[in-house]
Image (cartoon, rainbow, N blue to C red; front, top):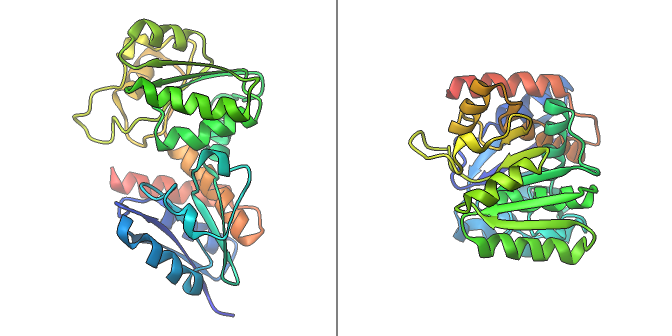
Length: 282
């Protein structure tokens, strides 16, 4: 039986921690598979997908292709479709089906780090771009009670709120600009968990998206970035419950693995490989 090849695509993608994590999973379960990173520019996406039909058993998608890939797929998971964000594609005899494991990844990262459960709870998202879309829709679907959306451009937060409300009319949603510090403080104080979804923190000289001192002592703070951002450092110094984005990457990757192989992901083998790969990069 021929080895199955899987990939992660994006631009950039060289920094991806997914290949060592997924290859560790294949090795742990003695699955004859290999996972590689492929740099795909936006103008190359259609050709890549056509080639993937013939060569790949499945692939993950990262920035900037999570929405752009949709027209090239044959089937979209109805739960993932409203968010317009796909991160996992499965190839069954040339038929490409897409879903998102991002929401599952964040849900399980928060459960593991904070024992946070979505149903009946409250959450504030800092940033309403790609990272927030799929996860905010997932939280709405899982029974969140109140959703607070903060974004640099208020109209982006309002547009996402309108989209979510169209599918989940009973969910209470509030929006504000990240520049409106009184609203930021109010939203944080009314939330059990804060999820930092902006790209601020990827570069060492990036400012924090909000003044760190606005983080309440009792909040669970999750940063989707893997580095020690200003907000993560502040949370650590003040004894605020906090976690970085590695847990989300682990759990969304484990879900992708299970979708592709039909087997339970070897979580601890994947976690170990992920932590080792992350330590090598930093």
